[in-house]
Amino acid sequence: MLLRLKGLARMMVLVFAALLAAFVFGWLEKRTAAIGLLALAFVIAVGLFLWEVYSPQYGFDMPWIEVQREAPHPATAAG
Amino acid sequence: MRVAREQSLLAFGNYTYQLLILTTFAGILTAAMVLQYAQGELPCPLCLLQRAAMFGICFGIMRDFRGSFSYRNVGLSLLNAVFLLVVSVRQSLLDIYLRPGHAYVGSAVFGIHMPVWSVIISAMLLMAYALQLAVLGGDRNLPNVPASAFPQLKRVGEAVSLYVMALLAINLVSVLLQCGFGQCHTFGYALLHG
Image (cartoon, rainbow over all chains, first blue to last red; front, top):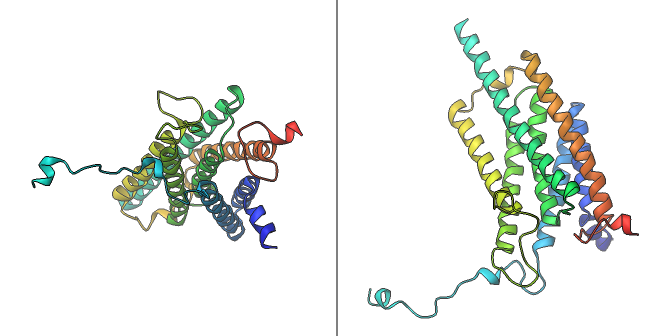
């Protein structure tokens, strides 16, 4: 069940389908349904984003932009 | 009498401002689709999420033109603008350092790649809303003036909203063809290649 839900959450098509439904309900001035569907699209989109940027190797880190100071600059070290 | 006239002028300016933002996003989304279909540049998953955020921004403005202006609608657009900023900054950082298998996707427009454009666009939108709040200062009477008080503006706003909805429908079909009911890839349209 959980795996199925996880699979569903990876579906980009769900984000766009929920968004289109939100627009249609918004156009028809069905406020609650429109906001509910927009919220659903937003939650799936946030989940998809986190899933896309997560790496089993690095997690959410971005080691390729991490910098390390090799040695203190003489002027800095002297204060 | 003078107060009512000033109020009406303020509401007119506000709806015009919203229309300007909506039209800008309709143009950006159209450009993205032209790049996709005319130049064969398939959008990456994060690019699609940025498109979704842009549609979310348009949703708040569309609701303004269907009824009357509301700060709740501004909130919805701002929420999506922040999401657009987060996704685009992360994508820019993902490819900021050249390494195997990582480069900015798609062609550069005026020398700037798509995720960086998204950062600029979302920052500009946040600034536009900040400017709006700075000028209007959360005017309490604005929601009392419906869009129908300016029939021509409402008609144009609704026409642009319908255009955005049509773009969204095309995007839905396109995403279905590209990703099917699973993970998105940029190799091709998954459903068209069996």
